[in-house]
Image (cartoon, rainbow, N blue to C red; front, top):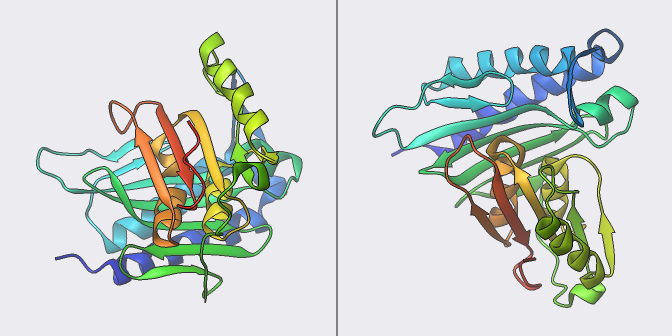
Length: 250
């Protein structure tokens, strides 16, 4: 039986170390190394990943899937637990000095997020949680909101990364359903805000597991509901989350 509390401490320490390094080295690390469509890769992504992978590997031998390295430790048949890591979620935000960016670390149990750390290092907020343990913001317990009516609630979302006519039509319908809509450019942060009661729901198409796993774990441990749909851990996903009172966005 694994000890989620010990593993949460491991993830928390790894995220904190990467977050501090990202803050201290923003000028040196904030250099574009590659661009693909609307996505950019900057030096900070790889530097932060090296810090997180080294820290996690010292304390755990579970397979790891990470945004930059892919399968840093390949998953084998029968492996139950997998780490999902985004060393810098919101690279463009980090590059431009926009505060919504985060180090995101999650543990999956047969594909289900059961532990999450989202370190919003610019705003000095670290969201942590694990199934059966609780959810916290900077060490204080946190809980989802109780708003039921979408017309009174806030939806966190993003423009579909692989937009089609159908996905854009669904996106437009969501915009009309909720009182307010926020697109902050960091899925991990957006989900953490749902967990902390700052928004009622999250919905995005085309997310990868490392983008959303930690935030989804936080939403569930804070009392909310999550739906993740996709064919494989390294393929794009359909992700929805809510406070458990409001409906899951379709």
